[in-house]
Length: 428
Ligand code: ADP
Image (cartoon, rainbow, N blue to C red; front, top):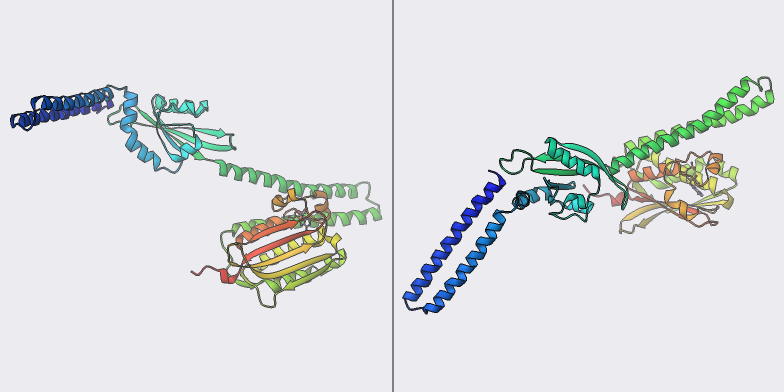
């Protein structure tokens, strides 16, 4: 049954119903007058009121029955279509053949706040490619796909599908197009990050590689018989080769930790001996830089659920950074204690404080990004890869912990590790 036929049948049903009411009212008023319960004039006035109301109802019914097929489709389809569209999680807009909105769900409203039901979609979605896709879907009767991006309020990318449907019973051609939006923004961001990461890693490896190739050429050519130059160049080459090895080592650690990110370590480990072991291992560096390292630790064990090797790696990075970048302060203070988190949970904290030049506030939020360095030259001179704090962050994520950094330029920096303690483990 087509939309118009349906209206006509419903219009006929309405007329019959109203006629019945008018006849019933006539009988009641006539009966009341005959029984003497109502004066003739009063009964006539009562009947006139009922008849007029019936006329108004009939007019309204006739107007809606004769309405255009498009608006009729929108009215008729409003409820079931709206219920279905509202239930979908992605933004969905249902359109009629004139491009008018029959229904849209909350995610679609969030995407196009100006769009209302009954509006032409072109009012709010000013992307011509979208309108074309909808028209093509109606014309060809097949789903059409396109990409759509928004710049305001921030960059977002969508894959949109315009799917034609024969909604009205018996419709020969599609009378509704469902326009759906799939948010590609997170995927796009991951792709960008991956591309940046590969570019950065290649660049970091290419620099020492270029140095090695250069020295090999020099040793094969002009410096072939220069024993002193050979000795010096071999030293530099060894340092460059070590740098490449460190970088590859850090890259592999990072990908291993990322692979295990969803598996929280479940072995109870005491933080105090781990930190002490790290300090022992870095004694030579501390002596070379003229830095005294002191540790203040609670006498009792401070137990967290952790991966021992990863925690060693974490503290190595923090203490090494303090010794390298904060050497001018001549002192590094380490504190390990049990405290209470802002959420009231017991937490283990381990802070590494140096008294060096500190870090300007604009760098603090970016320090844990891969390859981010305040001063690239200084980092390279110190044998840094730019991955140390990224590793720290990933290890902490896996341990459900976090890193806080406090620093004042000229007054050193404090890197504090917060880890949930073994007692804070949710009972399962
Ligand atoms: P890197 O391998 O360069 O040391 P990190 O990720 O460990 O890489 O550190 C990133 C940058 O943060 C360093 O290059 C350095 O500029 C800065 N930084 C880290 N720790 C300190 C510190 N204790 N004092 C001053 N700057 C620091």
